[in-house]
Length: 154
Image (cartoon, rainbow, N blue to C red; front, side, top):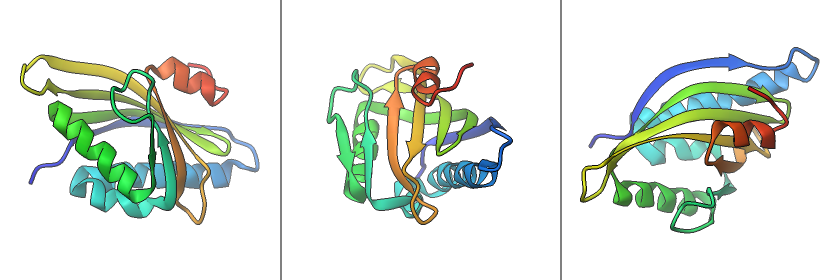
């Protein structure tokens, strides 16, 4: 079984203050979660998320606005694959945002049934880290909106 394409072209940037060590640890958790997803799919990525994790989808997403827990993550993954062929993403950058991590990605694939290529920049803010796992993820329709939500700039 093939899983989402994954390209690690990311650069990691962040703050340099005393909270930096914890923030960089959170960046590493997110990086490892992406890598696990790339090699083993959603099941491999689940250990990087708390059991009560919440994913808040982008407003334009036609399905659920929120996904709760590991079953919610599985559902979101299934919905992506039901809507797109050759679904993949390139992580372009991970940014330390103190108690959050911003991920700037490019989603790629083809619309199911039509073959129309899809290429979209999407941002995510990972937060509410507990026991070295991700407690929340908010998705944004642009890199700029994700950066702004985390109080960062391009």
